[in-house]
Length: 130
View 1: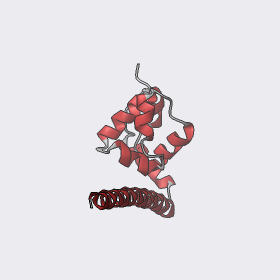
View 2 (view 1 turned 120 degrees about the horizontal axis):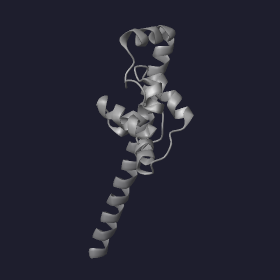
View 3 (view 1 turned 180 degrees about the vertical axis):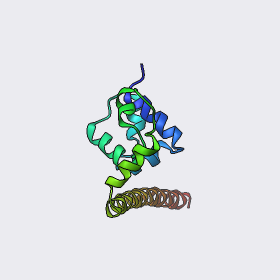
């Protein structure tokens, strides 16, 4: 029997996203969905709330129970979209963009540190050859 994490992975694949991009989009830690899948773990309610906020087209009943269709019908989706004001939609987009920038900056700092350490080690090795 499929668990919520299995259905979530189906949605991620359907949406054409990598697990990493999905994690960033919902504000989860890098590797969250893959860790949950690997450990066959349950998804927290706070994460489900974020998923539903960011992906309103996803049918939460299907996600949790497996009943019904993966995606909401167009009419239901439009009714839900009306609930989000333009300001709220922009706020969500800004949060996603900020999270993406933060993760990119973090990754660049880590990469810079690795490169600097490699350069220092190479210089040390060259100095030992003399």
